[in-house]
Image (cartoon, rainbow, N blue to C red):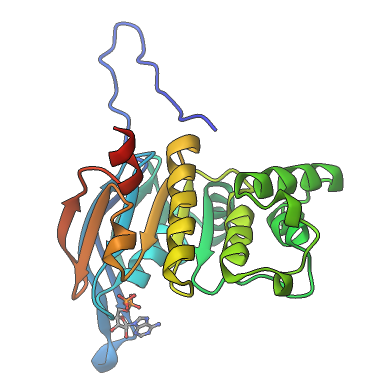
Length: 254
Ligand code: ADP
């Protein structure tokens, strides 16, 4: 996976590369009239390729709404969302779905694996939707399972795996399409502390070694500490952006 670089045209001033993700004045209103509720009230956020951002905030502060917007699962009511410079709000539903499938991988708190299906088949699923031939699916799934340290478990069903292993299968499924962005919604919410840190070390490695941009919602400060930046939401706005000096593992390596 390589980050795209823009070569400036000869004789012309270098065009600045737009951030990977740019939110400007994003609002989201649910419902209409007297029951309307504004979940996002004007969010500005720029995220560069390769960044690792944790989103924190009290329940109801707009984190999920922001994640759904960022992941092209939902559209804002007003404001501008540019992904790689492309105004997402001007895309059709199908174009948005294509953009989502091409550039995003999703990981959820609850793993969402198919129970009677092997780890490999679970990981292959996004490639089945893409219509990739069987042999290629198989090889890509095996590579993704290797990347999460589960190559030897490819033929096991989720019921035969621990919670931490199941989440690693879900991460393999999220990265099998080689996404540019990994969106993780409380990825450690169902795991004990040791498994949580193992999962975070894996996500950190994907960010560092593959350059995958990570956007993650979490309630835990020690989990958010893996990120480069922590964006705090409150009442539908970004209240504060906190820069982490270095993520835990990077501190040791520096
Ligand atoms: P968080 O993820 O921080 O808990 P959400 O983004 O889920 O916050 O929700 C923000 C606010 O928007 C909450 O008050 C919630 O009740 C409201 N909300 C979220 N989704 C909907 C919806 N589909 N319809 C109406 N209100 C919603």
